[in-house]
Amino acid sequence: MSCPDKSVLLHGMLDGELDVVGALAFEAHLKECPACAAEYRRQQAIRMALRRPELRDRAPEALRRKLEAALQPPSVPWWRRFLGDWRWGGAGAAALAMALMLLLVLPRSGDDLARQLVDSHVRSLLAEHLVDVPSSDRHTVKPWFVGKIDAAPPVVDLAPQGFPLVGGRLDYLDRRVVAALVYRHGGGHIVNLFVWPNPDAADAAVTAETEEGYRLLHWVRSGLEFWAVADIDLSELQAFQAAYLQGAAAQGMPQP
Image (cartoon, rainbow, N blue to C red; front, side, top):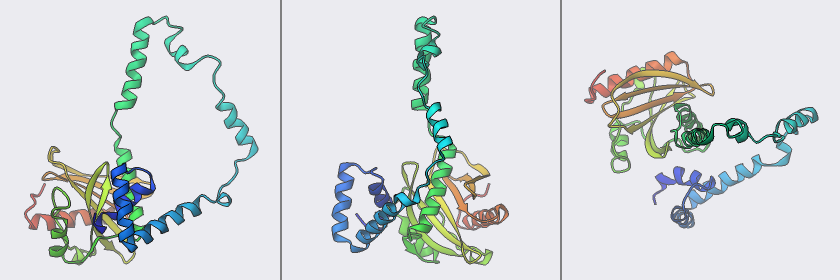
């Protein structure tokens, strides 16, 4: 295990998401790496501080009573009302089974991915793990990704357009390791550009959305999926996307 992998594994360890093998490997790494061990202790301390009782607000008594009343079980089981006292017979039971199956197997919505993207963007700012390879030289950043992910993304320095390259890192989104290119804008704003291979997806024009006050742009080009996330105006993020596409085209990526 190398330190560039620590962000994904550290948060997986804290959230209890690692399997036994991964947890044991990460614990062994903590014994050998003082920096990772210190970061792990820091994250644990933050979590413990946020759980302190004095940080919790007690709900008003009227609201508590209303919620308790709403949570009282109905006098008739919901499945009994759904099946109409079994008058549907086998057809009703089959319909209920199908509805439950759909709830279990439906894929996660795009909104969930948008939340993951924003969470990763914010986490990169709070956890002091903005980049694994700090460099404004694309010839340094792009080779660093080789061998760590399936396809290294085009790395473009956009300093002349007001978006200087800060570096890159590995991140974890939607159960996959992805590349994150980091740009700075206007002094204090950060743009995270998440990139991962999606060879089955056709090229798609840019679409915009907002999640928790953050702007997101999404597009697909040449088998790569791109998501740009930042807390800047939509017009500024669109200017970033256009400049990035132009720079990527100069490196050989086809234009839309």
